Image (cartoon, rainbow, N blue to C red):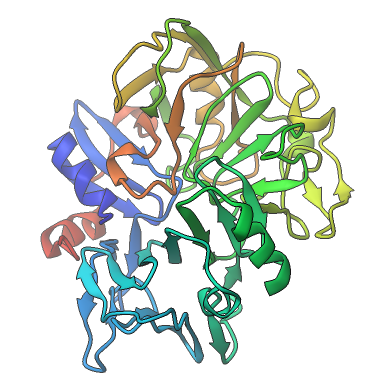
Amino acid sequence: MANWAKLQEDITGLKVVKRAKHSIHFDKGNGEIVANFSGAPCHYQDTDGLWKPIDTKLLLLPDGFYGSPHSDVKIHKDGRVKAGGYQQKSTLVNAKEGVVDGDRIVREFEFGTQYLYMTEDGFRQETVITRPPTTQEAKFLIATETGELPSKYKRSDITAVDADGAVHEFVNLGQFKKWLDKASYPVTVDPDYTLGNTTYGDVILVQGGSPYYNSRRNYGTTSAYFPSNTSNCLFRFDLSDINSGYTCTSVTFKITKIAGTSTNNRTYYIYSLASANSDWIEGTQNGSQALSGEPCYDARKADGAGGVTEAWAGSAGCNTSGTDYEATALMSVTQNATASNPTQYEWTFNAAGIARVEDWFGGITNNYGMMIKANAYEESTFALSEHATASYRPVLTVTYTAAGGFHSINMNGQMQNLSGGMRG
């Protein structure tokens, strides 16, 4: 269950002075404000225009569905999911009535379990099957749909991943069944939809060359990644709610290692992307072919049919220093890969990094995003902004002062702090 803003309040223990869609700001004292930024939305505006923390916990609605105040998505114990006039449902074989578990409904059926999740910006479904299905059973794994999906949502392709990591992209039932017959079990089938392509968030650029990776796939909704010399990860945080002209005094980037261990230490670098690559978006896929306009290793904008509309400015994977990304690193660190899982690291930006982040205040004109690069193949896996555990998600922490070293308390933020919002 995600309540990222409340988590930051508990960790920081300071007075809230401002809230925004992707951030929460605290009074640090001595004229300083410390703001924590998330790649995923952390606040929503209620009917009075106040920003309140998003809490994805499912609440029973009068019509028998379950929902959350921040979203128009509704989920039923019988497997139905609604958004506006749209509805979908996977019939499944001998499915039992679902059980509410925090931000998800869990449905057991004859040869597996279905999980229906409420997310900050849409809906996620996972259907885990434990054996090869018959053709008729395979058909029931694919949801039937009625009505039109609201235009603000983008549908991800249906993918299936087996126990060995092999990925199948659903095209038709016959090919799906043949793949399932040869797969290693358990297999997870994962169709979902999220709010459309966003300017903020994170996306992995993964080089092809293995059965499981393809340079034309988008990884915009993937929940974890392993940085290496064959993959980069792009991040962009929305700092537009800090006034331009304010002074940035420090920046840290918190990231959580959730899997993997090695005796080989790894060095990580963070760079600002170059202006020539400024118009990338996150994308809506979890390892499926990039849709039109979405990024992948080979393209800043794919054509949606396996080709390239616009390439990265320098080279594939956004790998050319001075062209794809600015040559001066915002920070670098050598990390001990033997740390237990999970371990949260806090990386400190250097003077160039602080200056670059300050340039992002007040808008997105100069905010081209940033990129993590690693010096070798990586044995560790890090959580991204879509990870189900809110405390594992990356956090950009920015400390700043107003012009002249003073700040005014934001009364809207204080009133929202007193009103509490959805706290779970």
